[in-house]
Length: 396
Figure 1 (tube, rainbow, N blue to C red):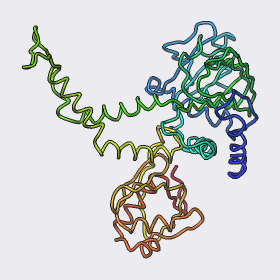
Figure 2 (tube, helix red, strand yellow):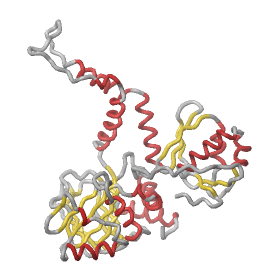
Figure 3 (cartoon, helix red, strand yellow):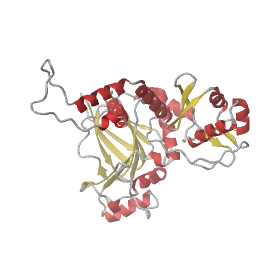
Figure 4 (tube, rainbow, N blue to C red):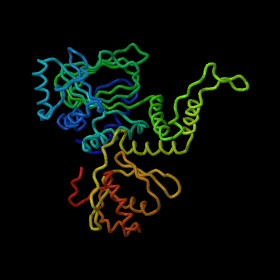
């Protein structure tokens, strides 16, 4: 970041007081990112076979969205965003275009961590998201977004212009007011939930967009997905679909019931919804989300490396702790969680500080943990990027 953390927090506090939950606004707010830094994540998302899974969308000003953009996506010969833009200018004979990629940040830990720190300042001012936020990177040239504004806008939206210029037309719900905002490199466009919008990407525009779910109904998809995963693991769910004879059988009171496999699925659903294990899974997933500032998916853990007693380590990320029953806790860092038990891990956690480097041997003496158990714990923390090796740790 260009600004120190206290300065960033103060800027977010002023922004929240003036704009959050209010009217749309365009304000100067450089995110400390350039188009070159995000281009690698965009290009990686477009590389086969990741294109479909990454939410890649490509459109031209004349043809609209293309299902198969093929060679119009970034390739190995496009070394930087300028080279890619110049190639498209030749191939499309000057026609405008727009490339957007949903959730691309996990491919680049440094980029993901930068954006996490950027938005964390806002969450400290307005509250941490209970649901995953959506990140989107876009490159555009004289091209509008979708032909019509979103019909049910249920998210707060933050859009940083990293290069070039863009304009946005906005229609807040329940009002007849139309806003037109313009932004250049280093500006932040903001609008609250309930605003339909139309983007227009102008000259050599690159943007980072963060969308924050703002309506309770958004939690349904999250909870439903968790319950569906748990149901599919249950043998009851594997039964064949029910077929009722005609006329359907009736009970002694004449009431017709649902086919038993259907009724059993309903009972399984309600049972899992009330199960304490579901509440725990939701709690643990929130801990991971809180440590990621809502940016999901998180980058995968880094590869394990051998840890020797003489190696020095120090904390490199906030280690969030939530209780998880008697003598047990869940730790979360960088979007990943770890369950720990006993007093030894807590003694280790309290000694791990960003400015303090200790050898693994020193941590072992302070924690009174067996050497093998301590090494496994520290290996997990290193893979989660909660600690770093002070001497020559180059793992990303």
